[in-house]
Image (cartoon, rainbow, N blue to C red; front, side, top):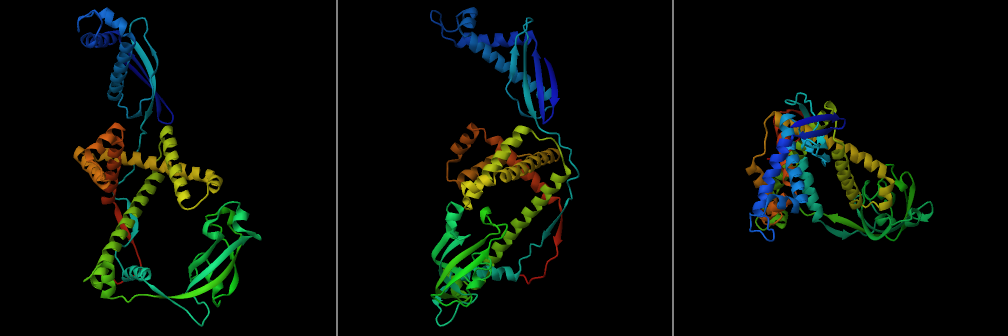
Amino acid sequence: MNITIDRQPNCLATLRVEIPAAVVSAEKETILKQYVKQAKIPGFRPGKAPMAVIEKRFQSDIKEEIESRLIDQSLQESLKTEKLRVLDFGTPGNLSYPADGSFRYETTLTLAPEVDLPDYKGFSVSVPSGEVGKPEIDAQLDNLRERFADFSGVEGRAAEMGDFAIIDFTSTVDGAPLEEALRRPAGYLAGRENYWLKMHDEAFLPGFATQLVGALPGEVREVAIVIPDDFPVADLREKTMLFHTQLKELKKQELPDLDDAFAARLMGEGKTLDELNNIIFEGVKANKKKEIDDMKINQIIAHFDQLVEFEIPEQLLEAETQNQADALVESAVQSGMSEEEIQQQRESLIDTAAAQARTNIKTNFILQEIATKEKIVVQDQELVQHLIQIANNRKVDPEKFIKGLSRNGQIPGIRNSLLVNKALDFLLEHASVVEIPQESNTTTE
């Protein structure tokens, strides 16, 4: 078997194969014998039809099967002899049978990039302490108290910071109603009735509440806000919005006492404040651990992204860029952006998606290379247990779930995800962690 490889940029290579006539003839004979055994030909008993009759009747099918087998065998042989790491074998073309009876074809391979790894053990990462401070616990308790607060009416005085103001408002830009100026729906910015506004500096829009200080219930005020240059609605950035605002009522928030009765209200009869504190402590601790692990991973990814350069297969980059762009658009829609706004930012979205796609692909190949170097593997049992857990979480039959994944060709991708996660865990275990100094807090045990 004659195999030649012509390597090209962007991880592509042209594979040319010539299979000797003897191999072609032997494969053809094997396939013909199988057809003789299985074929049903009128006028002949099963297995007794002449080979010439079989070959003529099933000529097209036999030719297709011969080519399929020869191509598959030669591709596997090329992996071994040429030590190729092929991501995609392409579609074989230029199939031909020269006069000598041999078989030739060529195909364009997509190869995995060759990654030259730097030192990857002991990489230094800087993260904050995972210690849980009392102020963090207190902040969580305050949030809970606010969620279960009661409200009473305020009489006989004007609005103050810290109050809850119930307001009606409409908005204009350049003298026109907001939605008329934008020529599209503007959501809550256009106006609301009976809107509850907590009177603090950053509520609703920065500076809005401040301009209501001193207002009495029933009073109408014009609140002018200069929209910041990072506002999500691009058409409003650095423009002055005018809010025609009427203060209807003032409310005072009355927080519940922080005691065992409050804990029992949240968690059930008999529960105590100490138990509530412990639950919050464990929750904050778990969240901080995840945040710190994410910070470590982000630093490791950024470190390798800067140090390591290699060609990336173009088709992988295009596919991943599309995936990232779809995710960005979905996120934009969920945040309230209109289709027109998304189109206006299309170029920026594509640039962001392409950059993230390149980083994702580079990271994946780097981690795969580290897994190879460290002999990290995903055992079949690990993979099966992972799939069973996913199925259980989705409340579906594990056997049917796994068979479905297999039919759709998704198993290799899931195995690869587990592999790169194990490689990341390896890097985290061998990283040199430096804690960033912080102001000391009294910990809660």
